[in-house]
Amino acid sequence: MKTLAILFFTLLLSGCGFQLRGAAKLPFDSLYVEAPPASQFAVQFKRVITAGGGTRLTDERKDAEATLILVNELREKNILSLSGTGRAREFQLRYRMSYRVLDKKAVETVPTTEIVLTRDFSFNDDATLSKEAEETLLFRDMQNDAVQQLVRRLQVVKLNRT
Image (cartoon, rainbow, N blue to C red; front, side, top):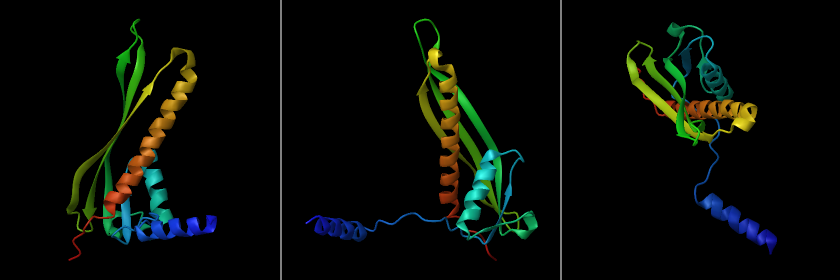
């Protein structure tokens, strides 16, 4: 009976069209990433593209079919609420990154576009070190999300190939 139920759910799941996302396949064969040298976002993005295997990263803009320019990357922290004594109790973390894409002839294919991610978290003065570590992890998580969003957005880019 148990194997029959597993078989039924497997057939049901395969019939609905469910499929794991798999590696990202970008619509261009080579890509140049223009970013500040210390950008952790660029390092992570390049790692994801290299792992996908379908697109080659180049060291020179002239050798690439497309160019991704990381225009801006910001981390912001805003106070959401205060305690009765005037101390911050909740914060909103915001991660912003903007980019644009050029084709081989330096024609803008994707205008400057921004990805914005936010996370709220509570703060406790008694656990300052752990809350600072939590903040760092939240920013890292937002950066991971932004990389994945950028990859998915790049998958639908149409380049002029004339």
